[in-house]
Image (cartoon, rainbow, N blue to C red; front, side, top):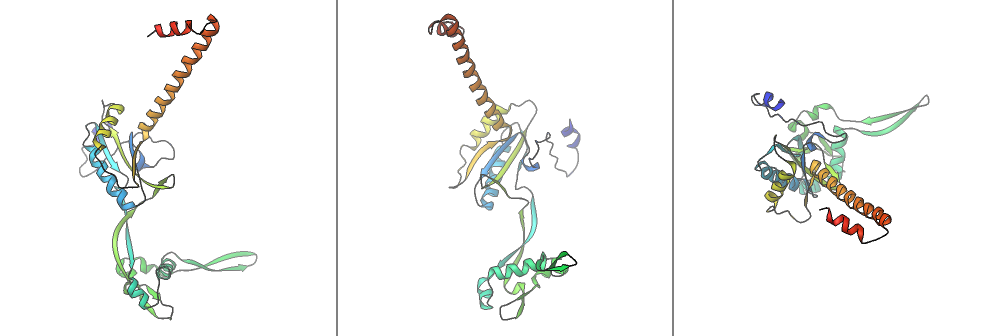
Length: 256
């Protein structure tokens, strides 16, 4: 009903989900979850979009969303090693000065009247106003010469991940989806597996189900174990009652 009310909003993408369990993020919500594991974020982003496209083609899936759908704008600083080496600068040295100017670094600790005060060195906020301002950030060479940052590095706008998730110390990307009313989770899962059967993953990358699908598989596994345990327990009780190992088999296998 909420989806029906909100779908009339122009130029607005609406995603409606049931309340997720505590600790799960918004991007990981959804009845169907697919986990892509690997090391390179760029590869995970590309694979997640391919998987999301295949899942969207399965009837009954709605609100399909990869975890890389939202990005955070950032400025990427690429050091020109040839120009930097000519001035005696290394990548760690440039990175350290950029970090100090933008975020600040503790330079000393001042003790006064029994209190310890941390003293930070930080550049003016004017360097945060954009790419051109940041390019004029002065970088001090080992010889004492100051050069602007854009003299030894290329600055470009880009989109970075909002967060980097890991499971088992491996980077992971998510693709989440919900079900349209009237569709069964088990049937949709089978269709998604068939749709993804032809997807070729690079070496070192894996794809697996999570969310409600994983809960369903674990529930069936626990149910199967409980059923076998119950059958064995009933057999033991009947064997003790009849004082025979054969009669319980005859009785139990006649029931089906």
